[in-house]
Image 1 (cartoon, rainbow, N blue to C red):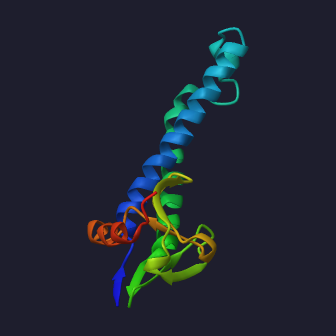
Image 2 (cartoon, helix red, strand yellow):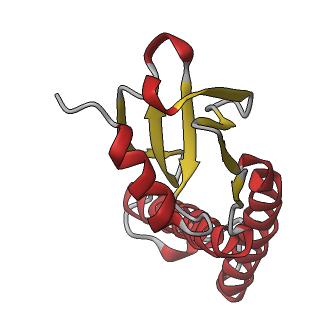
Length: 152
């Protein structure tokens, strides 16, 4: 049996960065919208938050992103993939365990699942396995899967 474990620390860095960008740009967009809707008035735009508190807001956004990025990546440690006697097993989108024969694989394609890049291995009615790109020996695993993907 070959086990391909998730590189959860690498995944945590990726998730933290993605989450920080989304939240920080959202905060900036909100402030710009408020700035334009108040007639370009800085005092009205920042009436609920002081200017010196804006960097603190970005620090809090980063700490929030760091906390949830690591929490999510530790949770995804269970998304490892095993191959044993031509049977692949892993987790689907909802993290339920799925397994099927490698010969049953119909297609495999990249997908971005809520900010986390994965490769979906689809076996039709037998289900799908979501393989995180941040996985040990990914080149070896994907080369094995390439042998079994049916050409269209």
